[in-house]
Length: 125
Image (cartoon, rainbow, N blue to C red):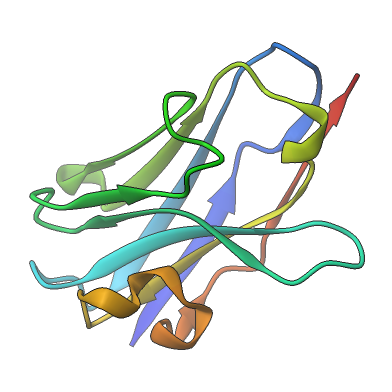
């Protein structure tokens, strides 16, 4: 069992930066995949980024490559999402998710049995 708590969302202007945090508790081990997803109003939840708990594997959605950076602090059991050059289309509820499986399915919500409550990010243009 893994528990996840996100924080760091807020209201910013286009071009600004935000850093989201996801504190994990419970079972954490090297094969654990930690992912960030987001959901805009009226749209499906979409993949943003994922990192293997060991840190040796990282993947991003094309829409955020070069602007967002995912990282983790093992000592704090926390995963971060640094978001730079924010755009209005980045607006949505951002969710942290965890899975005991790292593989081709890390891009899909169905890969993740554990989810946080979400944190709102609003980017005004």
